[in-house]
Image (cartoon, rainbow, N blue to C red; front, top):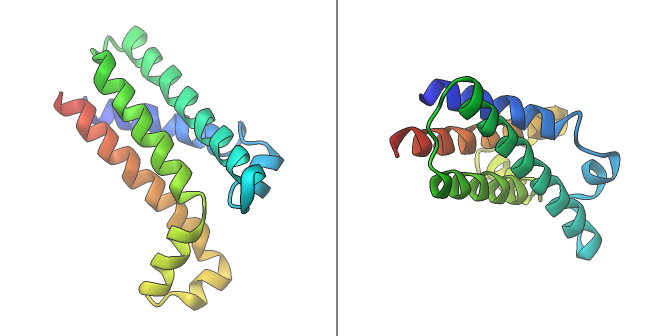
Length: 131
């Protein structure tokens, strides 16, 4: 069940991060102040909704049994971690700690960002597969 859950959640993640993310969200989600937080939380809510839809599709089409409370916890985890990662400071701090300043200046931050999101999805899929 882990593989099915992960693939569904990863597909939802890609949809929410690319075709469903507005230019405003992409440009402002890490900004300081209320406008940045509004853009960030709207983007996180898109992830919550996209993953919820995909889990529902998985339940209907694949016959996956996904208990409601664990599903809600996984959705909150995904939206919450996505929100924090997209504030950009966690990625910047990781890259500084890992001595990746050169890679950060040449597009590496986007890769570290996506890796962090995928790891959060792995945790959610493991959790749902275990319950």
